[in-house]
Image (cartoon, rainbow, N blue to C red; front, side, top):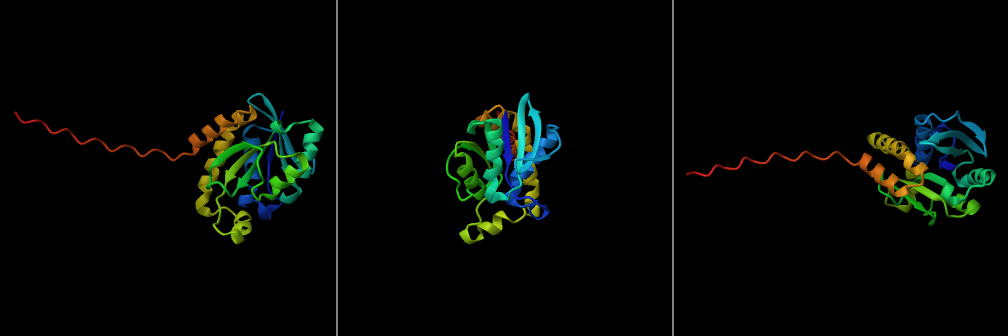
Length: 205
């Protein structure tokens, strides 16, 4: 079974925040693959379903971001899961906007949700990092993460989340490299058509 965690803060005022992109992604996955309705459990909201034959439990911790590890740890202990059975979707300052990368382990990179999970279960779980870019000034980081995606970014948000949803069977099977490749292919801009070649001048006799 895959425990698929989306990180975010509960409540309508945080709904469109960059920091809530994990919630947005697992919501979209649960809709697309017809998961059971969300219900309260493990200090969070859970929805069960299958993706390409793989059993998946989606989890949205309701503890607020800084205490996400309480919820994730409770679910992992109940189902006796190891780190390899857990994938956490979260925003990532150190990636360009709308880039998606997966890695196992590593540091928290200043992300309080990841820091909390590390503290409760250790660092060896899979992280699906959704790039939100860095504002360029450390003093602006909190405002940036807790700010909503801009109107002009909405199309890219949707395109990237749609790609994550489409590639989710690869994530559920544990093929992280294929998942990243598929997301990259689905989100790359369309190629510009090559201009037609000029006609070859005819040689005079």
